[in-house]
Image (cartoon, rainbow, N blue to C red):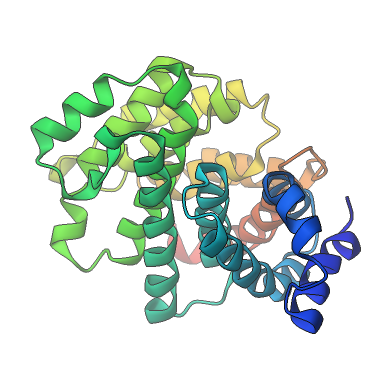
Length: 286
């Protein structure tokens, strides 16, 4: 399904206010959200996607109005908001607002998934921990959706110590994802755990050696096809440990790698750009 095909939904919605599209959308709501995500992930031009996403965010939110209990639609909307945060230019206030949206939809999706997961971000830790530990493989999509949205929310609110204090919840969620299926999303939960382990230097409680193991595991499970893992590995671990050799090797591997990979093309394209920027600033950093 091409981007032009997706534009049908947006054009139809805007021109006739869903009157002629209502039947199509009602039948295609589930597939639309899934197909939209796949098209975005497999695109190789971040600028095109950045310009297009706002239209589809409004469309998805409109569909949610009609189907507020549609877990998949809520989760897709959360994912798309999260993707948009990572694509737009640096604007802290705007990123916070968008991350709030992603978090809100992820939490709503979790609540639809099961009453025990309602208000996860407001539960006392012991109650939260009990709920997460009771999850099964059938809950893994929900866990990952909430975990990624929560991590993004913390990142955009990093000046708030109350937000930083919720890192433990994200760590527990991602650890549970790995416990249920460590190959899920090509082991991407390990990347989140690697970042959490390398946020702070060892003197302040960070565990970079453990973080390195997480990154290496993520590389193995993704068969080194998720190039963003190498970029994050270089930025979070190699720079912290002042390991110039590892830093440059990882980033040069990104620059020479094939970017086209199912559901990773957009991410790999962004990784290549970030790898160039990190290499260009390496002399100044090291």
